[in-house]
Amino acid sequence: MTDPRVENHALGLELQLGELVDQLEWAQDQGRDGDADRLRTEIAALQTELAATADQLGGNWPIAG
Image 1 (tube, rainbow, N blue to C red):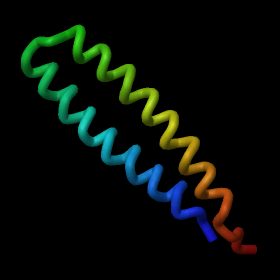
Image 2 (cartoon, rainbow, N blue to C red):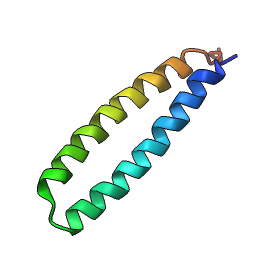
Image 3 (cartoon, helix red, strand yellow):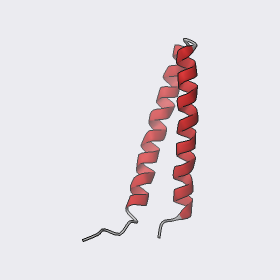
Image 4 (cartoon, rainbow, N blue to C red):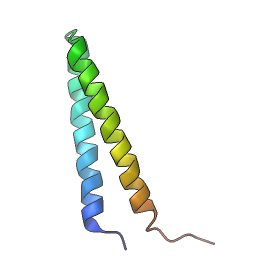
């Protein structure tokens, strides 16, 4: 069984990513290149953390054989 805290963490990361992507699109539309660069960095960090969290969740799944 998966740890609900890990599942909740993954969901929170997904929500944060969605918000940051929206902010990135707005920054790009407004020509705010510095903000867009900062947001891209934050998005990359969250994607890395989400991938690690997914690996942690995936390690709990039974392997069919």
